Length: 258
Image 1 (cartoon, rainbow, N blue to C red):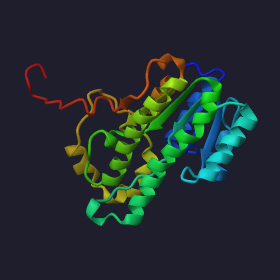
Image 2 (image 1 turned 45 degrees about the vertical axis):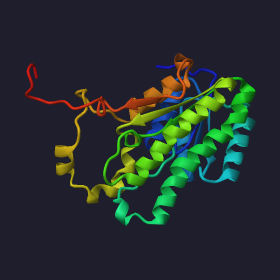
Image 3 (image 1 turned 90 degrees about the horizontal axis):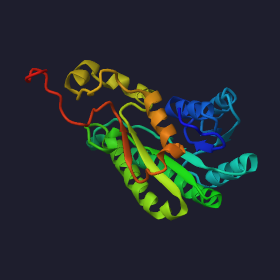
């Protein structure tokens, strides 16, 4: 496990799913954790279950004033911010033809503007601290396109681009910025769309990962721990796929030796 002793990590969308997994692993690794979400009751209760120092901050990632409040509360409690994870996101599964402007705006505001505000809001505290690591949760849908997730995929392509630009701008301040691209980061995001998915047809036609065991949120969280820690001190501006080899290429059973 990565060593995060003495680190103060702010995580968005951390009341459940991948964000909660990241928070649990960071706390177990020795970090002080700031749990943020719009699910106040759930987030507050979850923060109290962490093994190390923690606080909860209500945070709509699209709201500048709420970012200011969350940063101020974090600095008041812990005096510094050394790491942050832009995890909050929304999923839309719909063809481009039937996607409304309002739906598109919601996806882009949370996934892109929210990430932008997270980066911008933590630059000052990290610069003052002399070091920092920002991890943006993207997706393999932001690396290779798929039908029915056009706006979601576009938002995650944007997150990857923003990651690289921020890494270039902030490197001189010893602030690293990287993206984690899971194949299955937060299964809870898919649940509202399950009644629209023909699971059998999807599994029959979907690419198969190279590794025998499918990846899950814990794998994406472990990669995030690595990028938050000094074990990854030479890594910035990079995409880290956690997909079991899903996008590596095509596996063809029946060829010689297979």
